[in-house]
Image 1 (cartoon, helix red, strand yellow):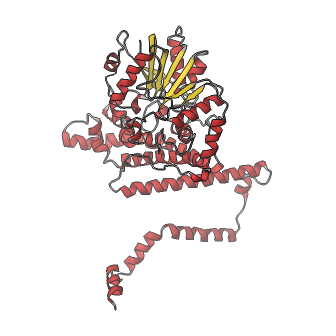
Image 2 (cartoon, chains in turn brown, red; image 1 turned 30 degrees about the horizontal axis):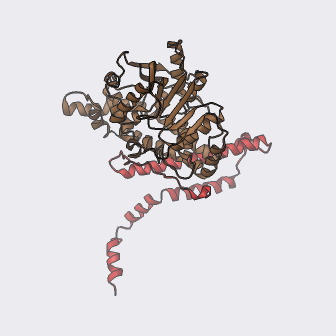
Length: 386
Length: 118
């Protein structure tokens, strides 16, 4: 299978690359594509023909849990090689995106600061970065979301913007907007009468998923929050350069300063799995607090583990221990109905559904798998109406 | 402060997992992939070079395909290939040379000798 090639859409905030810097990034994208299409399928073969038999012999039954599959797969040479290469591809991805950003770090900050502002940006230097962001650098981006090297720094945002495109191998669209696009498309199809006038995007990073709500719900006031200042500065410059109005503010989604019942729609995209057991409860409670009665909460994620085969769960769980995603496993095993109920969402049934990807331009691998986050063809959406 | 004054953190915080029974295999694989990446970058640059040359009317990829190497060209190239192989396989050949010199003294014996000869 070959994935149709399309380059990320250029915008004013995107870091420029020399010929060789771009070639280095393209290599990483091809490397990841090779792993997904050529080496990933062999994992199942290695499991069925080699690893599973070893467990059967020792225990007279098949592996039933992530840990039991892991016991035998971690000893399998194909799994070892695939994991080692996948981890390496992740490190090379960040390295290749860091190089042009480090080279121009001051210029990028200046350029972002001088972009004529559309919408607004409100930073809070006193905001405490939560420990679930500082304990390890999530998905191995050195410095995480929050590290700042210079005044008005946008480096981490610039690296993230490019890194996501390479990570998803372009399969989240030219603006990395697939999660937002898919959710807006679903809302318009399933709830044509729903016309949100005030929207909040939690954990927005550089606003990849935020902007579809601006374009999709004309006239709506769109707010977006994140804990990381470099993400928000870059996000604001990026949105401004596209002449799209978003009010960005540096806030923790657990405890925002927005008024009670002030939004019709609260969304997040791959935020929940990057929090913690305590934080996820606070976030859902906060969604309930800021939503107007009848308003909608929607969190876009990857599918929960419930009902998955042990082998598939083990592979899908790879990021937990191998890509600095410490809350990934637990977040995929949560009782989402109870989480909603206990956070105040009592009058409506929680939504747990697979929403088709809006991005149809390329062929997809149609399965979620370690190292192929954007390739599912569907997104899992968890939410509830208030 | 200029762009050059800033160095980004290059290693992600968090213990890095290794997969092979000897973590040096992981390290070696990582280095091989980095080399493969740099080879790809160089090959892409050559590709661009050919394309620019064609656009500018200098020469095309076809000119390269059709260029006929003389015997002397090929001899010089083959000699370079041998040098390249010698460099890459140096450690293997070195082991073999040791094996062939069976009567060679143990390294520790040499240390002992130079330390205690006066």
